[in-house]
View 1 (tube, helix red, strand yellow):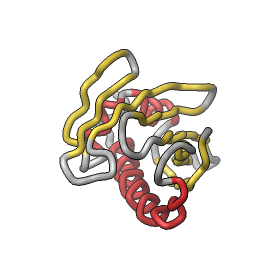
View 2 (cartoon, one colour):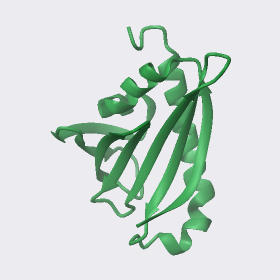
View 3 (cartoon, one colour):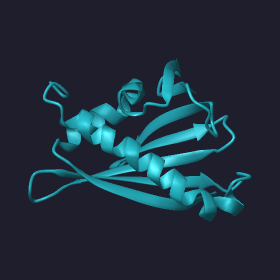
View 4 (tube, one colour):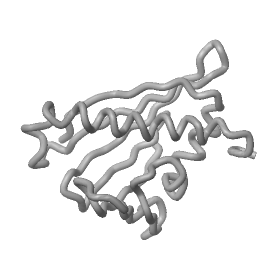
Length: 143
């Protein structure tokens, strides 16, 4: 069981296909999340993430899946277990609206205090979302 904590949105001047390709290859996270120092593929679509700074999850296992029109990062083996749901829609302008929704697993110790840590988590996730946007908008991505 999971509970939704927040959703961040940003407009990206790149196609859904480009953004999806970037998100499905978790090794790309090294280019848009500055706290991550190493990504080791453990199995198909399963990765060990190591952070170079103090964090709630210095290490965690992320499983990447695609279900319908959503890409899902499921984090396990860390102090804070969560899922990030990535959804996209093409807008009339040709840009893509990218939505990032964080769900906490109910068994987390952090769930009772989630509303207190929500602003910090939301800001940190949004900062990474802004860098992801810049990375996806680079001319060479998707070519």
